[in-house]
Amino acid sequence: RAVVNVSGTLVDESIRERVLHALREFWTSKSSSSSSSSTGNRERPSIAAENYMILCSPTMFDTTSQNAAKAAIKLKKYEALWNLAHEAIHSVDLLFASQYTAVAVTHNFEGSPHIDKQN
Image (tube, rainbow, N blue to C red; front, side):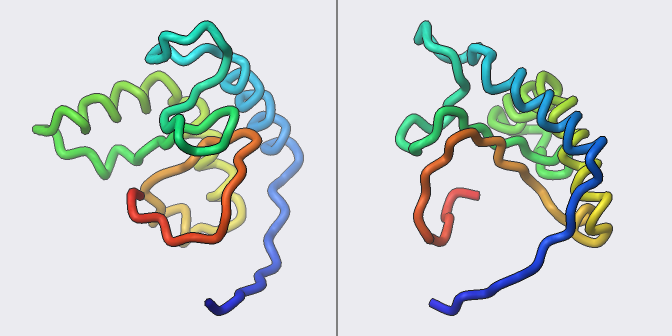
């Protein structure tokens, strides 16, 4: 597989601070869908991460689908995180900010190079 190196663009400190504050709140909250007494939000327990959640853009919702209804409820619950992520992305890449359709919210994620087939 080809390796691609890209230099990123630093997000403004005031945005980073607000994102980090919101992430810390998310990381320490209990998932409403978890029956476990431990803290954290792990949508996919098979993934090695303390917290793992996917938020989908409202443009991805098929209004007739049950999964879309669940995704819309989740997006509403975590709207502040979605908006902060969008603000951060928009501040450094206007084109990508108009095209992305989902954000992975993770904490202590351990992964390996792969092609994601789910999203």
